[in-house]
Amino acid sequence: MIYTKTGEYAIRAILFLARQPQDALIMSSEIAEREDIPSHYLAKILQRMAKYGYVDSFKGRGGGFKITKLAQDSSILEIVERIEGPVITLKCVTGLKECSDEHPCPLHDEWSKLRDNIHHLISSKSVRQVASEYNDNLKPIK
Amino acid sequence: MIYTKTGEYAIRAILFLARQPQDALIMSSEIAEREDIPSHYLAKILQRMAKYGYVDSFKGRGGGFKITKLAQDSSILEIVERIEGPVITLKCVTGLKECSDEHPCPLHDEWSKLRDNIHHLISSKSVRQVASEYNDNLKPIK
DNA sequence: CTTTATAAAGAGTTAAATATCCTAAAATGG
DNA sequence: CCATTTTAGGATATTTAACTCTTTATAAAG
Image (cartoon, rainbow over all chains, first blue to last red; front, side, top):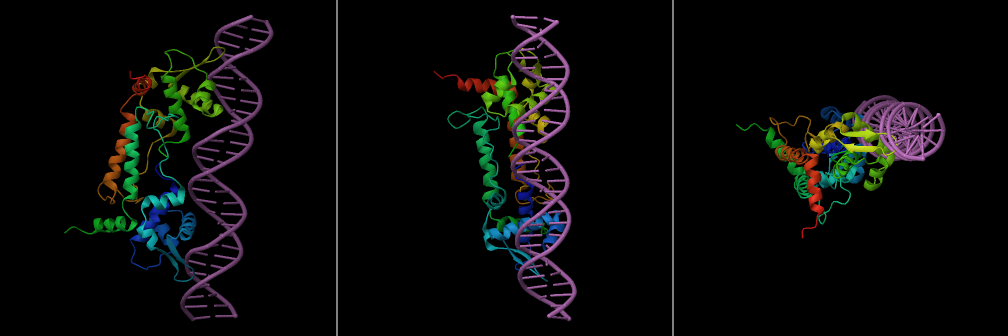
């Protein structure tokens, strides 16, 4: 596991919203259905994301959620870490207590590199970029 | 998180045992103390590892645990997965339900590569190799 | 044979993550 | 104002991981 279910649901929901037409309001229940996420649980996550400023919420008939500029400009990593805390905290794959740059275990250097690569992968692009590339992938090439 | 606490404790204990003199019997309580692991919990994990054939256990005065050839020849990945199940099951860092080689999300290829690299890192060397390289690191260079 | 040290086994506890349910509040349409 | 729809929020249940405790079985030493 790289992130928890909660973090995964949050990202799925945010990227779903990022792919919708600007200013469209999407109901929590629709996101849940389309992304196959437990609907009450997703509602909770959306509540939290509203507090963090990642989505705007509108009650009542015709209401729903939409993604904010803040979230569009954030990376996946930033959002996940806001929701669930630090991603990949594992210091050492051999579990050595005292493993460090000074006293490395045999796998220390390679693992450090991989950990950095993962962080880079999910932090170097904004949600907006990822979503737009996703839409590009879907457009027929021809 | 790459593995759970349980898996991490198992690896710490196995690598600790792998670094001991051959045929030495080490008490569960000593491993717990030296590796800073909750002792009763570690006892449970050692029990399971005894069932899996990764350690041999000896009751009574002078008893304790020692690592088996099976564990010496296994990779860290094999042991962790036996203890806690599959490592890094996350299919897609963008959480897309339908992400696959055929319909990749924008981060699919890079993520697949990283996931494979992690698996390779913890599966290409045996416990014996890792432990012996660890001991080498500890020997003064001079 | 008795005592003691040790692991085995299993029951029980705690804590955190995940998931569900119910009521309140707000906005809209009539 | 009233009814309906939708989010907000609190309470609670479920599940799993993490940890603790107690008793039993086994082996060795005296």
